[in-house]
Length: 251
Ligand code: PGA
Image 1 (tube, rainbow, N blue to C red):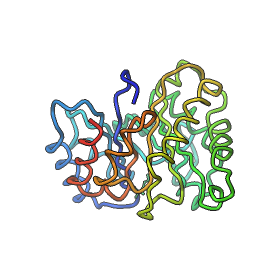
Image 2 (image 1 turned 30 degrees about the vertical axis):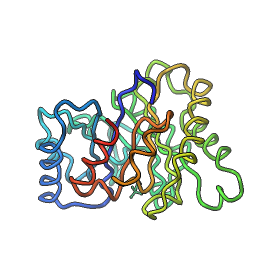
Image 3 (image 1 turned 90 degrees about the vertical axis):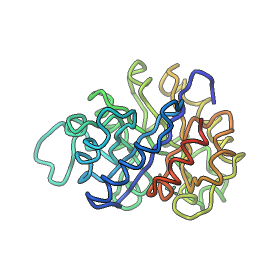
């Protein structure tokens, strides 16, 4: 990690948690967080729980994140949620282009680009996800795929706004599979992303998160790599104890 970068540990709750469960998890995370901590922590509940979790987190340093956003501020877009609404409910971050959205909901790099711009225009911070499938890794295409996703997903971003950008490298084969990238595999792609970003978004310092089966057992070794600035955590973020251990490993 570069010394000027504050690590970010973000929990992606995906399609989990009723209101009561979400409130309880937010309370536990808030209560268990090291008050002297040097790590930024954020949680991304489902849309239905954002307001309730925002209320639980009022006055705490834990950031609120959404799992997606549409690019229009308002209008006839049934089922969609806008960056304006997410700002209104208290979000600081918005996950964009998660591989599950790409796979199950047809998200494209062009859509990711529109969403990232809309999120930045609203003063929120996009966490833009990229990553290769197992077939692409085995075909030796990892860096090419990540480069294509970044160049298209981040094209034309305002270099000043880009300071708010977060990029998450999440190899698809490591998400929810228990099969984590090794620290060396993660570092290789992170270093590549770090070297590519000035070309794509200018000289802003962008935080690079790793995601894919991060657990309390593997977090420290991953986060010790020089170009990992934090983690996007799925399964292990659904319980306060494991999520807090990962946050502690980033300190
Ligand atoms: P996982 O999910 O930690 O359950 O693998 C990570 C993610 O999809 O962000």
